[in-house]
Amino acid sequence: MEEKEFKRELAVKWIKASSGNTYLCPVNALDRLENPTEEQLKTICVDESRNPQND
Image (cartoon, rainbow, N blue to C red; front, side):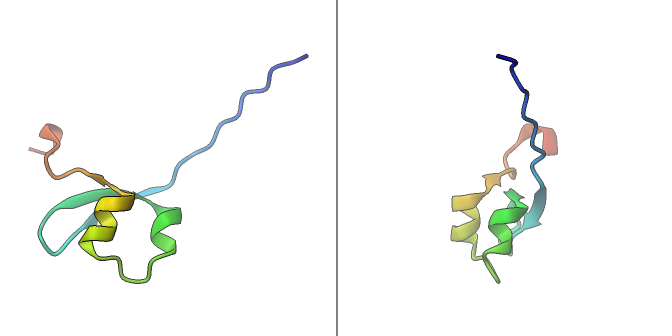
């Protein structure tokens, strides 16, 4: 049986919250929320604010 490789691109978007924190979020999840709160961003996104590469 032949193995097939599945590839999927993830569409992500950087969002800057009113607190100044930045989040890397999947677009599909963001599309479900009209105006996400920072608590929602913390739940569905990766907090990029403290990433040392951002300095």
